[in-house]
Length: 250
Image (cartoon, rainbow, N blue to C red; front, side, top):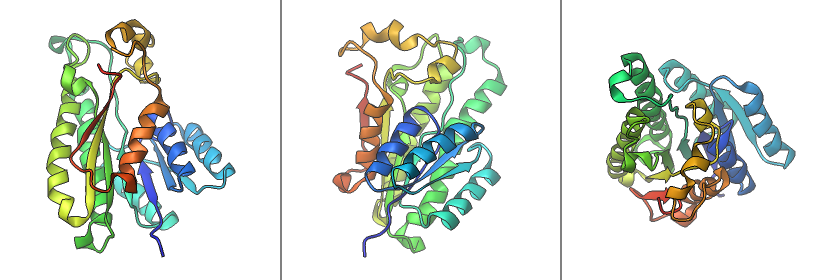
């Protein structure tokens, strides 16, 4: 009997996370939609999935809080079963600022959520998926950013640095767990039309910078989701430690 396909998507209530949840469900995945504060948005994603005949749950957790992450995984274990994929999508940006004006509080928040949160979520996924722990293998897809290559100068070098850390983490973990049946890859989106730009104080950022993209436009959350779900699935069975740039050539 085939193993159930069960994925946890952090930051799954909006943007790329929500698009990934919906696409994964259409391809037969049971989906845990993680959210931090917006329960209504997460429940709306779950409702779209269940109305279409899929399985999904909403699970609250701030990934920067280890206790909440552990409780989230216990909920997934109990309600869906043993995880076979993790999409480390939860992340934040902050307002445009030069480094000399950044507070330590800002830097700690950035790394607590974007880096430490991703590592802790991956740790718990490995404990469930690794063949050395009785699992049947699986896939982890980390959400990096084209900013890890471009640097974010004059806007958010802290965000870019956090995504650079995700790149290094992807390489190391991929090597560490390859023999445990777990594949680890990363997506590096470029200018994507989501509300993360508004949360950073630049709601029109994609339109303003589209001229820098060789394809001449911003991307959509659905276009990123296609890459994420492919990396989760059997079509990518020999793909690990790989970075997929979904950036229109930028």
